[in-house]
Image (cartoon, rainbow, N blue to C red; front, side, top):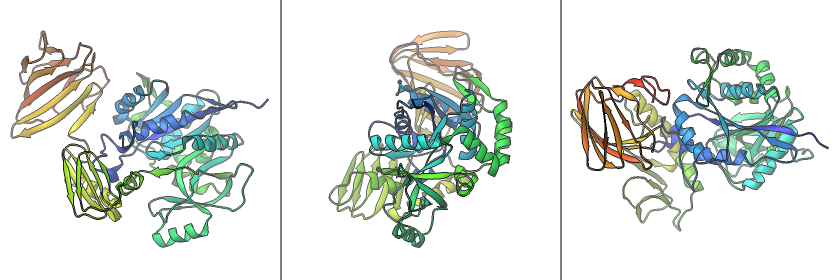
Length: 486
């Protein structure tokens, strides 16, 4: 009887997805978007890696490594998949994927076992999940023999936005190849040579290895990353289902990717194999990739939302908020959101990241948050603002509440449009129902709570000399947020 190996999926859920701006933003990055079907990219990744169990492969709880600021987005999307269990490892700040994976490996080792880590980014689309599962199961059986196994995607075109794996021509018993080297995002001429050569594959960013093998390889190539991450991990805290390394120590961890820190150095030092991932695979990093994954009409157009086309060809139009009319376009990407519109040639979608950098350099906020902002208690939508006033539509989930808080610079008027509101204002607590309203004076301690079983919706009108989101003094919060956290 063969022994049972323990599999521990690791979903790396970091990154801002800036090349998919304006739909993807730092506060709501691309992995949480539903770009097709019913589930977000993050949820699809969770479902794939939780289908890997086999008689000789015992599945453990998934580890999700994400940024502190995204913890409630992750929780909300996990609640929509109630059959899945996950442990959330929270990075106080982004230090790239090598420290993130190291946190997962250290957590995995705490069980006293040495599970096989199935590492997957949270922002990819994969077709033919059954074949994906069989391939990863093969990879896990190789990894049980202390192999590092990387999933390579047979290239379909001379893509310059992906990394490449160079492998030998000989095949092992499971169709695996020895990895000879890596190349990161070659120019088009080199990519064409790789395509013609035949022994190059796209690097999917998915790999399988024992937790001890990762730690051993990291100690060999980048002991500084391992030592710094371990110090932060040893001072971890746990609360409300979250695991947090020490913030001040984690800030000192060198920022480096898995590929640069370890994977690209492994061939010839650690046994490194590649399995071909022969499925429909897309790294949805740019709008051009989204267009390629869509279902085109006869003219090659892909549309989402309320869109009218006239004499348009090979155009992607993604409308989220209003009617978008398009006439006489070719090879364009048009993305509409309530507060920003992107128009780009499909050959230049990699450069959208430069627009996001401009927004940041100019001190603007459109790269950070959408007009509609999600919070652990619900969401708010800033529907209008002007000099000394702002109007929001606010939804509070059943049995949820905002923090007990006050503002130094603004007063607020609340009108209930749906549900029941429990309002604390100073030492008074009142219940308000549809069409009733209340006033929160400047400087008054207050709280909004939904005691009911249906969502509460209100219209909030703020007035004052400063209406920024950082004008909040929290006295009590059910979600453990500090003064500056979301």
